[in-house]
Image (tube, rainbow, N blue to C red):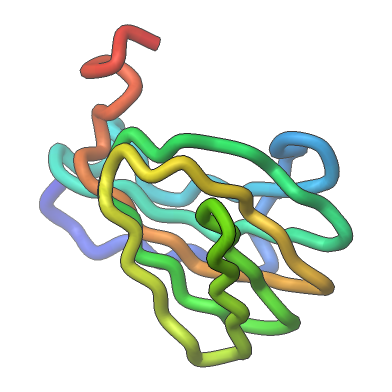
Length: 113
């Protein structure tokens, strides 16, 4: 891709993610050969996952929590987390909206998913 893309909030389409989460994927392998990105919402849920990529998470609104074992990272708007690949975690939140970026974008193919 050699052009700038704009993703307007009014065009964003969220789909279910886990039990109680929502995700709007913005940048995937069809756009970038190196990184992915999107927006996710978490409200009253706890979604278990082991990240298969490095991930950067920026809390945009609400209260976002990232639970890693017994450690809870409690994030307010403007807080940023970096999560290394192979981290087992739970995405949680109360009215939380986050922006995320991840690398590599082709993590599914590399993991055989």
